[in-house]
Length: 108
Image (cartoon, rainbow, N blue to C red):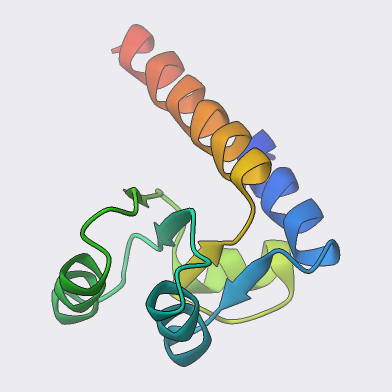
């Protein structure tokens, strides 16, 4: 698996205590208004995505290309949904994800 900068930034957010991982903790973060960004694994179920989108109508959501197992490999925690609970981390991670997408769009 290619080393992607946004995965490294998610790891930093985890070590800083600014990441909620897994369905229940991420949903709790959304409901309490702490979530600044919701990140979904590529193989997460549509039901979970729909549930989070209903709960977090004003929180940005993004689906990354990594699977739940690849997130586990990168972050050490098996989760299909993550919330970033810090505005600075969220904006930087979003920026890095958009850069990755643009790099791949340019190659095709």
